[in-house]
Length: 541
Image (cartoon, rainbow, N blue to C red):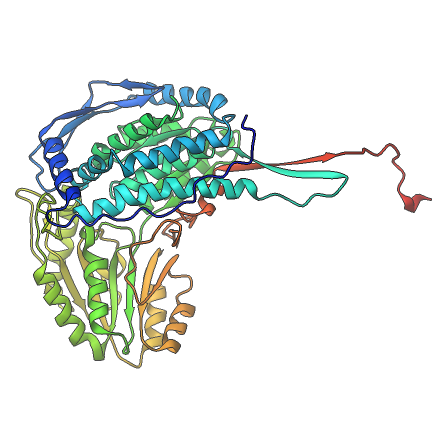
């Protein structure tokens, strides 16, 4: 046990490198990209400290060059998941009792490994696997993951320091125990930082985790795993498994020691998992914690007093960075009629300047969407828009998957605020705009609130403080992350805790203490110093 009230390093957000032409970081990441692109890696599962290869493999290819194979990964049978669960439960006995400062040291070391020797590798892997530009990879795979690791350690110490009042004759104290069984972490393709944080945040608080990364992100998930291993995460604490998601999930949820899920992915899948947990509820030793961040249909609303250039920039960045494949991406916009002409001209000019292609060429702003299923879905909505009478395509509307899954940034203008692309989550570089009458501000805010089942992010633009105040009020339940005169993307760990409600999730705010509270089960301890020896109270005489 530690002997001291230890203070951890004050968490600071990792500075974002610029990767300007001629810079050392640009040279290093391009060299690493080419090396990793040319190699063919074989990714094993990681169970009980061992690499497990089953021979049942799938290939991994970059979205921007889908015929090029960069590696393979091995898929589990049910017995492997059961072995991972049993191993995790065995590891828990020691991990749960490991002093907090030792757990802190591991994940602080992981942060510094990413900031230093692994930075180029984790960024290059994310560029290859998820087709992110170097800027998007840097703010995600490097900086945000570093921030999660650093701030989570600081948040953990703040939680442990939260103690009840005591008196002179009794000492009251709270201990923050890890959950009794194991945690199941399901992570998405679109953010390497999320893939790292979902298992790490639970593990930091003393839990053991079964981690299933997205099949489309395993190439970069392997780098995250390598960091965890080098940082000193003990065998069995974080088990990485791949394979049939239904089989893995059903096996996990059938186990009586299942105690929580940390999920980022689709609303449909999350609801299905919640339903299965309900069916199995009688089997569990404890009520499972259910934490999920799911979909979004995020909005920008621009008042007649808004600056058109600012609005256009917010749309260009908020809708099209990383091809719109962010849960927070701007997907529906409501623009006041008097500023629409200027917003449109600025937006079209910006989009025409976009360069599209492989992230290896750092002049490109747009790359490919994640896989063929996503491409086909987006293409079908674009084709539908071309044939519908009440909509027009302002710019874009073309696509090509001959080499990579490229969708040109597309702006749809609709006369119907309930048009399908105004309420359906597309998860791609397609944004739909509705132009409203200048004097319909309040009605439009009501429309924004009622149109979508989601409530993740949203933004309001105005130079009129009364209009802004009304927007904040009317849209209080429409977004868990609300932005004033800024795009609805780009939440920063430690500054803007991230998460939404309604169909967007449980709003447990990744990047804050609120999320870590879900991975502990507090125990109240009262110690009385002089114990009574007579049952009689004064009122008895």
